[in-house]
Amino acid sequence: MEPSTPLWLWTAFFLIVVFALILDFFLLKQNDNGSVSFKQALDWSIFWILISVVFNGLYWIYIYTDFNTEIANAKSLEFLTGYLIEKSLAVDNVFIFLMIFTYFRVPIKFQKRVLLIGVILAIVLRAIMIFLGVWLVKEFSWILYVFGAFLVITGIKMWFAAGKEIPLEENPLLKILKKIIKVSKGFDGEKFLTIQNGKRVATPLLMVVSLVALTDIIFAVDSIPAIFAITLDPFIVLTSNVFAILGLRAMFFMLQAAATKFHLITYGLAIILVWVGTKMLLVDIIKIPVFISLAVIIIILTLTVYLSNKFPEKK
Image (cartoon, rainbow, N blue to C red; front, side):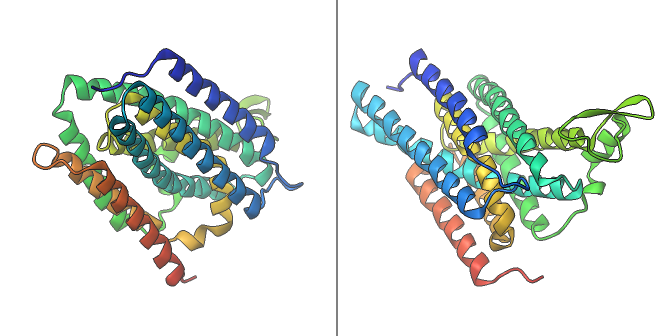
């Protein structure tokens, strides 16, 4: 019997997310120049991971109480695997944010607001795409094959693009935005609009937020199908996604200080995407247990981090 999620659990999850966003915004303190120390970012990253583990434990207790140990273990494992997939993909998302901030020379003290907006947008966009995706899979089961093929192709493209620096000015999204929006030459505090030569124009900060939002959409298209290879339970898909995103700001400041230490992570993410895509394509031929997927993902990530430290990036 597949457990259904009661309204009170959805409500509790929603309240946890709202509280977490407020907590993240006010307690992740920045220095006088707007930066966040590596130690503080690391501590907060660990804190968000622990919060996710506690939530998963409470969810296990709920399922165990209303059903049995077998179902509770299965659901808990699905959450953990989905969370790990989304958390690893969020790393690549953070690297793109770093590239955007560097290109626009966004002052560190302005990055906090942009990141908060990015996190909120990511949560909203993923919620919409998750419920749409679940509906599509239930109505058209064959679409899982489309998702699987898409992930395999994306993984292969990511592998060959890894390590290559593509100038942001060549990004088609940026070119389109520049044609649509008139941009001022400099920042005007944290304002998105300013007056220049008597006319209201956008500041570079609005361009940054727009690119971050578009990046969120692109990464949602990658990450949502990936978790469908693990489960189609909308509650698990949404919660694992959101909990992976909640610590995005802390992860950003942590990786900002240690980006070169994880220079091979993109190769690992490419292999993970190919793995989950293949799993979806073979769903009617061989059903790969969730614990095997979890083990494969952990091994790939561990090996990637080890090799990144073993063979440091050459300057």
